[in-house]
Image (cartoon, rainbow, N blue to C red; front, side, top):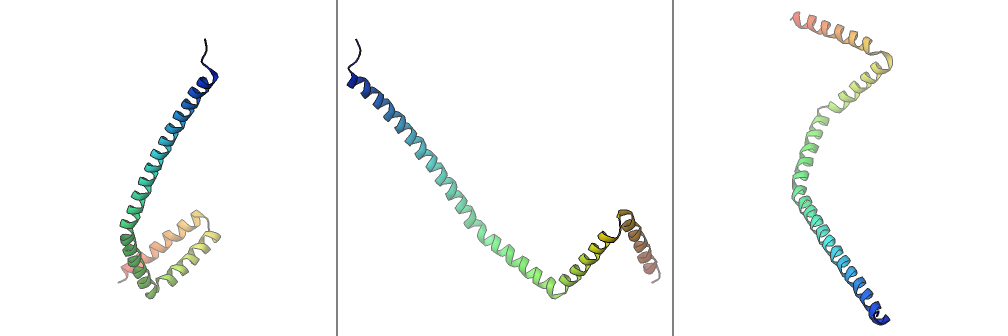
Length: 112
């Protein structure tokens, strides 16, 4: 004897509903975990904002001081020299120039 068709279909529907309820519970749990992660991230950003603002203000002040002293122009000129060296000489040539430059500087230092 088999169960009447209505009853067999009802059991299948109940099983489907139970699976759907379980899936909804899993989705809700994942949603809660995601919300907690976002809240933690938001709190971290709120905590770090004043620190980052202070660090950026300090860096800006330092860069302005260096710019006022002319470091930017000197570094730019130095980069131009380095670029010219790279295009003109190979490694061995640059090493020889460096050796000779150091020798020259030491000679000048000893002349004092």
